[in-house]
Length: 294
Image (cartoon, rainbow, N blue to C red; front, side, top):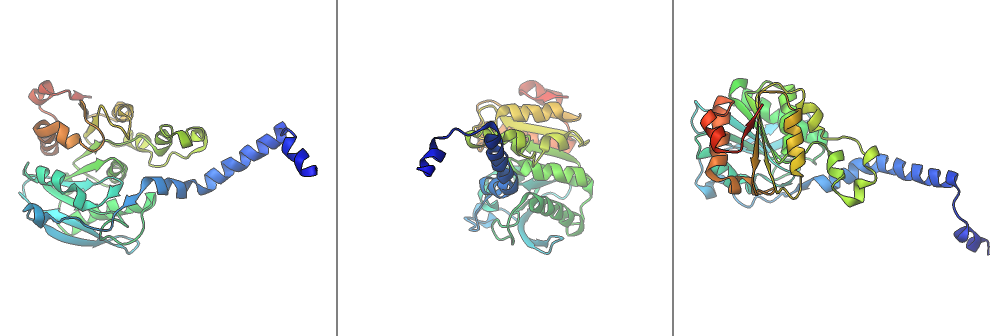
């Protein structure tokens, strides 16, 4: 009888506040683990190597400050050209980016493609702090292992990799920064997911690209597909608006999240290679495309 009364008695305002407060506390305590579960999708199996694509490369292993060994591929190319430090997205591993890299190499660019901790042949488990550390270690390897000057390094971050590239741009000297399909923050991304939308006011702004990008002074090229089904196009636009000049925005009409380089075609790679070499976009290319400068 008492149990039935408990079930049928309406909760008081005070009880409701206590329960909501408890739920918020649980969210704050466990959100980092939940966030990591939804963000990182590493694959340990390499499905191909650059040799399968007839690419000249060097297999690289380098160490992080916390003593993890990370794996990457370096595509040497023309030594007079810049090096693209390629920070990939949240799923798979470097073997899934070979088609993209092959087309960058065809633009006579050098590329260093590496896996974060827990991806491919890299040791450890991914986390926000961890992949920032990995990106900085990859940059430091280019300086110390390849004896490159900072003026030769162009950061390229796709999706989650945009956060890594932006972090490097804040902590190290570089030539320029390219962000593609990048989001503003995980809180903003949570608003796009019904499960988390109600909790967005208390969700931390992890991977806060919007704030960090406002502090980056090097030239920036921001690329985003107008039909991105994962990261809303509006977030790419917001990153561009909030970024310091010099900057260029390259909206790819009809492109989704993962097919930007396919939909963009030759103009996409010409834009990237021109920006990487000149840290700007020639007027004729701007006129022929939908690029917007600032």
